[in-house]
Image 1 (tube, rainbow, N blue to C red):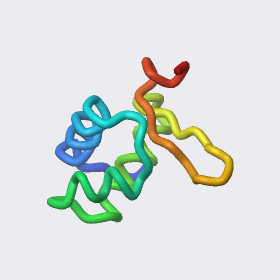
Image 2 (spheres, rainbow, N blue to C red):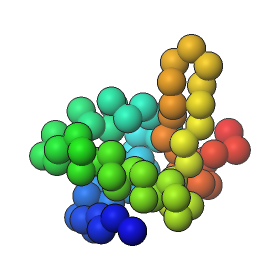
Image 3 (tube, rainbow, N blue to C red):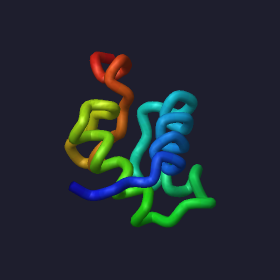
Length: 72
């Protein structure tokens, strides 16, 4: 199991609450105080444990959503 930084996970969650849905690139731009790799690891862990949803959008890549907004 990969250890993730809860500070980065909290930042990802906060950003998604205001800009959901968004791409990973949008999220990285929003969280410029964190490295791309730290954000990626946090997104990976959060998607594995259900705190966020990755949805494939044909032709434009993946969108990150909070579970409560994944239906829309």
